[in-house]
Amino acid sequence: MKIFFSENTVDYSSYTFSYAIYAMREGQEDISPIYDQGFLPYTGNTNLEKEVFYMARSLRVNLKAFTDSSENRRVCRQIEPLNIKLETIKKEDFDLYDPVFKSFCEEYISERIGGDKMSLERWDYILNSTIGSHILKFSNEEKVMGYILAGIGEKMLHYWFAFFDTDYMKSHSLGKYMMWKAIDWSKETGLDYAYLGTAYKTSALYKIRDHKALEFWDGQKWNTDVKLLKELCKTDEAPKTSDRFKMMPEQNNFLNEL
Image 1: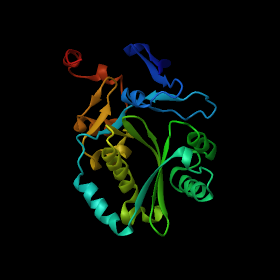
Image 2 (image 1 turned 60 degrees about the horizontal axis):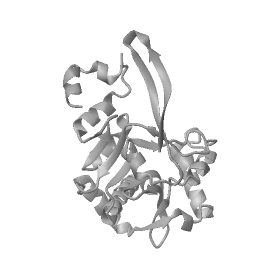
Image 3 (image 1 turned 90 degrees about the vertical axis):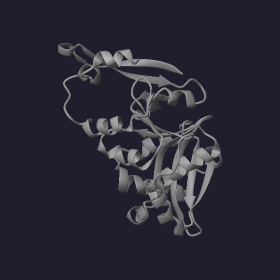
């Protein structure tokens, strides 16, 4: 991987000069080390020919320490009568243009995500990226219940995009079940980590509350302080006078711990 920086905001009054941090995948190198350094796939520009990743407050589950939470068990009991089976399919063995799959995803995008956030052109670009290597298919004898586009490396799974039957969203917590099942499958398969995307704002708190053995990328390391993570999410949208380091009451303590 190659890491590069892109200059962002400038605030001379507080000597704050921000740079966005990116990584570019070189060839078909394993994606595990890229994720391990706090990067996630960037798909905002569908004209990019290289696979680019951005550094962010990423969230992952340490699978060696993972055990089910009471919420995980509650959701599983709720889902059990539906008799859902999981198939993990390599993308090369899956028909991305299958009408059932296409319409399922497109209807979910229209209903839950919105075309302004996920155009069909962008979704096609994401599907054709080699980062997403597998399709996790959830179904029972009657119908397809959901799909996950996942990136699976030598040591990890990235729960990238999920689509599910919204008729079951409130009655059966289907989305929560699919995330838990992806984590559980990863642990059973012998992987080290399951990545759950970013952890920003209060909209990410459900991931943090539902699962144990969480770690978040704090800019320099994987941090297990879930209480801090919740506080960061709750204050993400509050106005800030400077970056978080300059706002620390005990900057020297922080530096001594590096």
